[in-house]
Amino acid sequence: MAKSLRSKFKRKIRSIARSKKAHKEHALLEGAVARREEYEREQAEKSGTDCGTNFYEVT
Image (cartoon, rainbow, N blue to C red; front, side):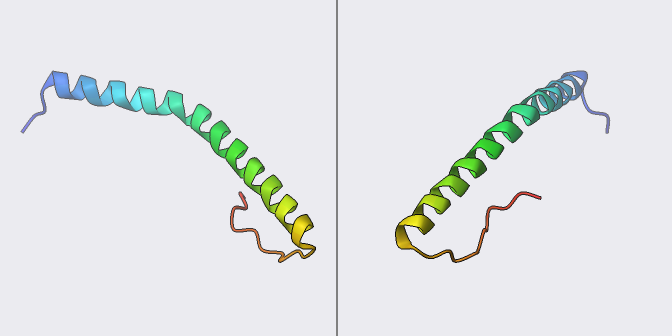
């Protein structure tokens, strides 16, 4: 059964909105990872040990 033009239009608009948000979302994620790494570094310096594990590594 054919979908209505309105639902096709709404799906298209949502996909455009998602693609516009992708760049901003990626930048926020990168910032969060950087802050987490800095926090882990500070904690390692305070404790005097470096556990060497990084679960938040972005490849």
